[in-house]
Length: 190
Ligand code: SF4
Image (cartoon, helix red, strand yellow):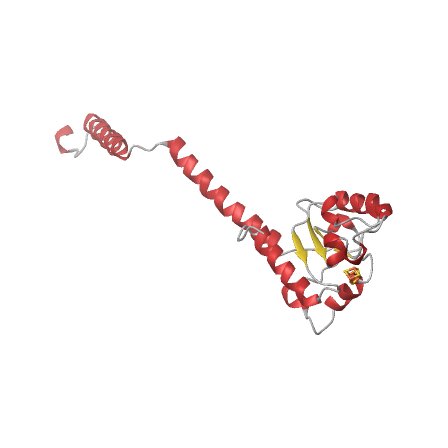
């Protein structure tokens, strides 16, 4: 009766062992290196997430809403329909520094206002950026030799982009924000 059974227990066990050997041999030929694989995956994830973070930052610049002198009038004009800054999302001015990452220094900076400016800057979200808007914020402007006005905001805060003019054109601020976007996105060194 046993001869009629196609596979006895012993034969079944042998075929199973043979199959295991075949699988082991085929896996050896692939030679997976787990550490190398995870290293590649980790690098790829870092590259993708780094690019994503840079893109998010450059595409969501939120300026702080404040002005210091007559350049602030030009800053208001920046919000007009003529400039249409909203087309690139530049009009998300916030009244609290905790929701901002861009400080646009518009006007001359007196020595008495420096502590307040520094405090606002410290309260802004990191990474944060500064734009010196106009001659006064860049170098003191017409009050270069004044006893109470500093020769540029870069004496107290790190400036990323300078905008020329007295008064500076709102169009130039538009260009400065585009330049800042490229810098934040790692596309140019400003
Ligand atoms: S740069 Fe000219 S327009 Fe701007 S704050 Fe100074 S004086 Fe006024």
